[in-house]
Length: 259
Ligand code: PEP
Image (cartoon, helix red, strand yellow):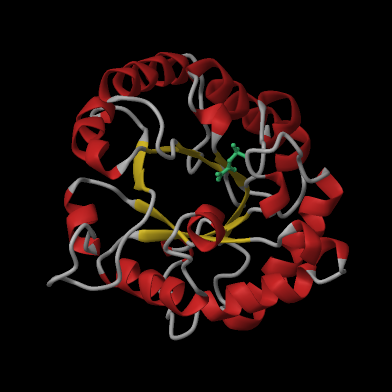
């Protein structure tokens, strides 16, 4: 059975002191919970804080993730970070293809670049959290499944999966990210079931155990209904991951949903 992963994407928020005290708060809250084996919680701070936050989570069950990675192993790529550099910080996860990198920030990453990043991350022993999701106009035009099929297939070109825990997929409808609008549990389940069926065709041995997270204004009060869906295996959480109480609220809701 799949156990949830709750991953907090801090984006370009917090300073080091507030990141450390957030981790302290999460650690204190987690100490009061009994998570089943396999239930995981991760924080994804800005890259410059990966090393110190690795220190702050030391000795806890918290996992570390990065928000992006470059696809080359080294060289003249000013400002970029190689997968091995990210791995050296102690990070296990790396978010790849977040909608803000696909659509908002000047880089405008395309599926080919995202695929190169996924492969490079895997080669360095990192676990990609591959983000896919439709824009509002694509949903309204009835193209959600086409977009998901294209983005997932393109992101996984040439990927060999030796174990299900080496890959996480995040369904993040772009219209729900940071907007306060959330996909209904039914909309999320439909999208996740579609992604699962694509994984089944691609990795028949592992598809049932790869985790598919939901991301898009997940909060303590909607998390249980979302994570209670059969194919929703946790959350990639933005805004609500910046306060210990709301992040812990989502973790508690996930616990209740799988309980
Ligand atoms: C995200 O950016 O991955 C995200 C889901 O953000 P929010 O929870 O703030 O919508």
